[in-house]
Length: 112
Image (cartoon, rainbow, N blue to C red; front, side, top):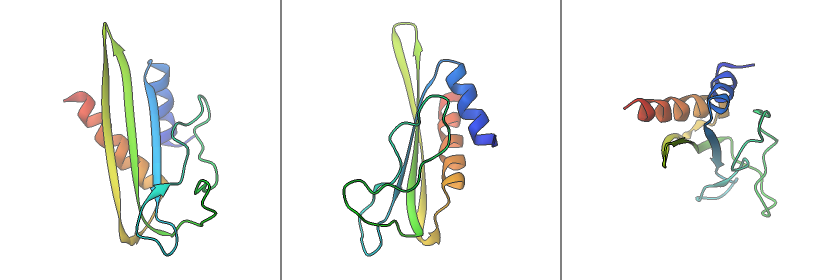
């Protein structure tokens, strides 16, 4: 289990709802589209193969965006924080690097 997987599992065990979204550029496109499911299944922290939903397109190996949203009940309120990592179109996309950066930013926001 990777450090990211352990951190996500610990957050879930502590009562957080965790959403991970990773976006990729389709080949020959200028707009991002969802490449991974909106929410990882509980207990399943692995990502499925690329799914550029209903477009039949393959993702480019360059550029992308990862968004991590953490939510937890705090009495009568729900605390929600978000971390975002952007990958330059000139750089190779890495789901683990994007997840590490976005998760770190969400945790930093949580501790602020």
